[in-house]
Length: 240
Figure 1 (cartoon, one colour):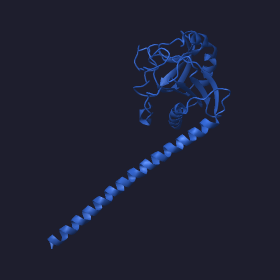
Figure 2 (spheres, one colour; figure 1 turned 90 degrees about the horizontal axis):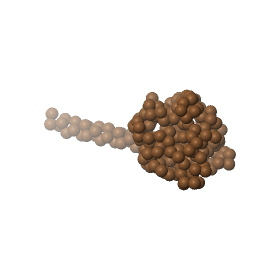
Figure 3 (tube, one colour; figure 1 turned 90 degrees about the vertical axis):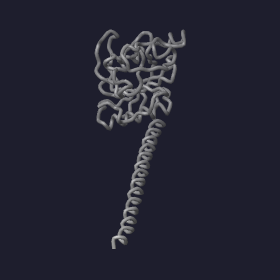
Figure 4 (cartoon, one colour; figure 1 turned 180 degrees about the vertical axis):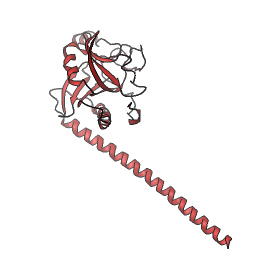
């Protein structure tokens, strides 16, 4: 009798195993489809905003730069960490002689400011190509930041920044990487030598716009520094 039951059990077990394996593959496929659809939906929304932004006579950042900024902005917003809807985008693929910083009001979808911005002196000359999160590196750090409080220091009125990506920029506050004004960030110097002055790692901006910019983006808005070498943001890497 037993010899008749055993083959039946083997068939049943094999069928169940095949079913479980098929079900797991179906779950994985469904999860991949959901992730793909979510990504496509986010990119669609981003493109819709990008194409309808009120430019205020300013030019747009490149779409891939805006998309990278938008993806992180949305993650940080969903975490409830933003109290200011302005998004600051810095594109370090551009030379320092060009205006490569945009302040975008995401609530009314409008570019409100565009400016020159310096990179760290050890990150490169005209172009920023080398980045660091280490103290005393005098290099810029890429990635997403939350703007902090305003204070008055050696550069006058300045804005503290908190890096949100571990290993990329999480030492920003300890390194005193802040947004401040600097007289070496100006168009005349760029025209004369082909590049503006460089900072010790801070995103320094022209003296004539720094107070306006700080007032706009202070108190927990999102600031993003882009470079093509940067890997895409993963939610798990965002600091809490």
